[in-house]
Amino acid sequence: MLLKDLPQEARPREKLLSRGAAALSDAELLALLLRSGIQGKNVLQLAQELVDRFGGVAGLLHTPAEALKTVKGLGPAKRAELVAVLELARRALAQQLTQKPLFNTPQAVRDYLQLQLGGLHHEVFAVLFLDSQHRLIALEEMFRGTLTQTSVYPREVVKQALTLNASSVVLAHNHPSGTAQPSRADEALTHTLKAALALVDVRVLDHFVVTASQAVSMAELGLV
Image (cartoon, rainbow, N blue to C red; front, side, top):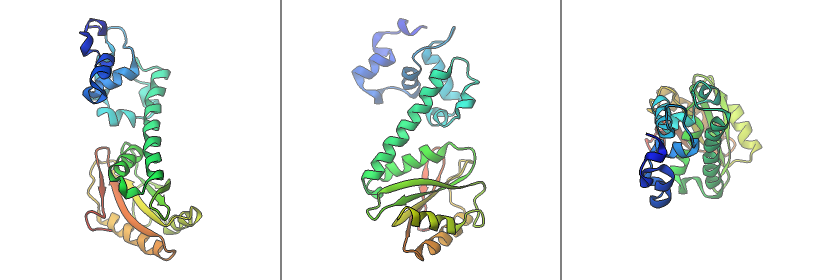
């Protein structure tokens, strides 16, 4: 069925305007971005196929632009739009965190970390550097690779904290496996960095373990 053959109230654009964006499914929202399908497949069918293939909207938006080239019907313009939507979401969340104390918006912190780290296929250790009001100064990716005490250098984290004049930090790393449970190595690293940063009067407020579907606070588990 072509989109024009659907009842007007069932078409994504009209549905959004009459009922609001929250009333649309992931595929319907994606169809609005894509705007058109390909021969033999309308835009809703193409959108649903993409959602299914890449593990939902979050998986799709974290898929590198190069990987999207393999999808028939996704030309340069549509690939660019998908990447742009993710970047806009990141910037909107970052703006919230620079304007308000980090822990006034705990869900925004989780959303921001998931957008930044959740869809990566390699392990990354990052640090959110905060000012004296617990507002975000910057998120810095410090290290890549398997996370161990020896792969993360405390002096580099301390150096960057001093450079940015940070008063506190939130640590974060992703688990590409999808398991958000902190490991013993995560706990050991947290305590090592906490001790090193304390020497320059910078507090470690939390350490998040991030996957595509959640961001687990080690502080809430009593591990920080």
